[in-house]
Image (cartoon, rainbow, N blue to C red; front, top):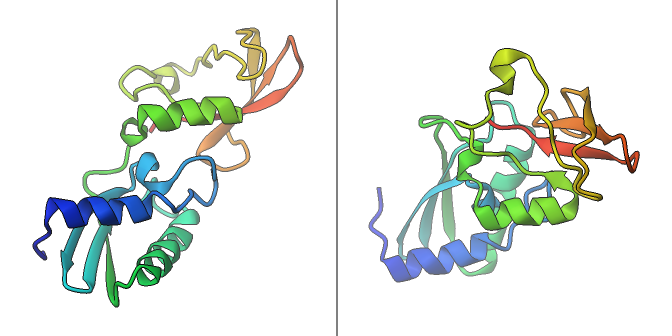
Length: 166
């Protein structure tokens, strides 16, 4: 692994904050928690990422965006390391990003240790991101992407996504 000063790492992290999540463009890949490490030596940069789940179709786009963004800022050689251990968890999404999701209309995940609905088979009682009513129902375990579930508010009748806890 290459040695990196904190100043250089923070500068690169700032550049990576410019890259939106391809599936949820209101948050960036740093806020999503997929960036696990950065190291630099001269114009060579290594970025370590963890996929949100194996087979996530957005990961290739994230890799391409990391490479093009860092090249734009003058880094000549970019290496992207993908690690699967520890596995990504929704707990890595920043609290600020969770609030952005809520404002955008996606109910953010709770901490994974809080959500045990998948064990019991019971659906969660979620507040509608539009009218705040808890009179909501699960429509489908899969929403606009497989990492989201589709809910509907029975008061305002609007559908909304819930980013599932992993």
